[in-house]
Length: 418
Image: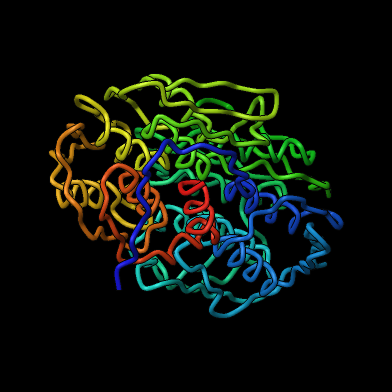
């Protein structure tokens, strides 16, 4: 049954609290699981992706207990192998947990949602093989048996996902001789996510050297237990801030960090380039719509998760919008480039796929439609933004937003109708 999305009958105004960063939450959980003692995480995201990560770590022997608004993580003396670890459709789970299983006693196997087998996994599994693991399969589902003593060198092509690099770097300090990891491909997407990984590793005492722009060296040693407060998820915040830009309203996201390694922070520069007004507070960010938006040509190599929101902004802006540098999102929850073009055309917009992104012409007459979401939470954000200005838009599936923001539908309706 289609799920109607609300239209904005007035400018969208208000303040929107955004839950914790998915990227930071799942990295923090992994580092706490690998640490030398208990850690406490405050502000961790409550979502399907983080729940899958917690469940997977528990299967490997990690103790994770909610205490009030915090999570207390206690690592085991030795990880244990586990069968049928569920990765869902979560890239961080399917790419961060198998490296931990490399340190376990016994064989582990991994499964996922029906579409999980379509997500790229080969480079990570190849890297694990180079570290000594025996791996059966090149995508989900697969089985992995760790070696008696892991090796310390791997060369992988991470062109399709920076998570392959992050997943291996996270365990580097726990390998007997550390890890030297080299990316062999031509390009490396989402570089800020790797920077987030190396920064978080250094914060817990791990020595990480970047020998050049494609080679990392992690020294062996302890991973210190730390108490951490998670930043708001700036990519999830993007759709709320964009709502102000397309309706001439004003939306504030509290807790916005003054400096952040999250790629989602780029949304402020994008909406500003398109014609909205941005106000950066000491611990907040506000976007105000001040007139018609203009299309833009933007390279989202470092922030590809913003592509659906930027595509929706472009469809409501005047002129042409070109999004470049995002070829790798064909391997996200769905082929996001093909999905965005298909749904833009369903609305009557002019849109075309390119080799590394898409191009579209905005400010045309868009028609009501039931948009397909492809089990992809970001496609719901895309549709929700368009529905503000195009009454009669619905989506085939609203539940997929639980991946990163279970209360999105409630929060969105509350803000739009405030």
